[in-house]
Amino acid sequence: MPDNNIPDPTDVPSLPDRPTLPPRRIHTRRSWIGAAVVGLVLGGGGGFAAGRASSDGSGTKLTTVKIGVTDADQDYWKVFKKLARERNIKLETVNFSDYTQANPALAQGQLDLNLFQHLVFLATYNQQSHQTLTPIGSTYVVPLSLYSRKHKSVRSIPSGAKIAIPNDATNQARALLVLQQAGLLKLKGGGTILSTPAEIDKGASKVRVTPVDASQTVTSLSSVDGAVINNDFALDGKLDPKSALYSDNPKSATAQPYINVIVAREQDNDNPTYAEVVELYQDPRVSKLVVAESKNTSVLVRKPAAALRKLLTRLEKTVASK
Image (tube, rainbow, N blue to C red; front, side, top):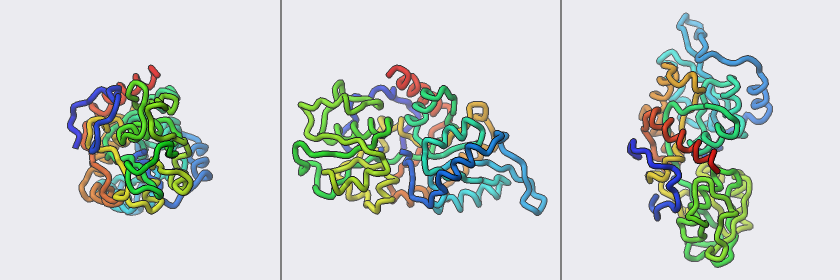
């Protein structure tokens, strides 16, 4: 597990050689509720208090916590909700097919918490949207991997090969660092968590990159030499993580900016009910299912909320300076 020493997230000139990690796992293997429900969540009017009182019909007082997610169909939620109910907390999941909507929904008070993103994604959102959403608990880090249906190893990828990478800013930068770490390209200045294809040193690079929507990276495999694919999309596409040609290391200190987190509004960062939700997520009865559903690629992280917020602040400064 990563320790509580917080590395400077700008110190990513080149990630360490293997072994070194969305979303977040930004997980998508689910039955989508879809845009209509997202619209309902965002347009439902009225913010939620920090936990709403209700009853289960037997007179037991329940505190309802509405949490935005992207993997509500996964088995661990059944156990998670059951354990929460035993503490008189009713977890209501709101599933998002477009993960760019989950932070606005939280900021606008339509959710109490969300659980889908890593710290770089959150830092970028806060800076671009002038928000102060804050992490209240850590969950896991997952690897980002290079797959191919045409080549059996990194070494066999030919010069001039085309590699698809996610086109959203945070995953794109990480994908470039993965390709650099694999020896397939070189970034000017070594690269950072905010690198773009414009920073590729073409003369020193073996491959060309093609940015595509992250959800299209798996389907692009038939038309490119390889693709850097988020763990969730790889699992959705029935790819075996063991078949990846290369992955970064989720246990590395340089992976800490990609720790996935449970997020609240700033004014709720000390809410005791939300702290219980974090504790229950980290219960082995839940976390072992999370790891199993990632085909054992997730690495669980136990980092104090104060340390997460300190790292987030550094990342926000990095984003602001770009």
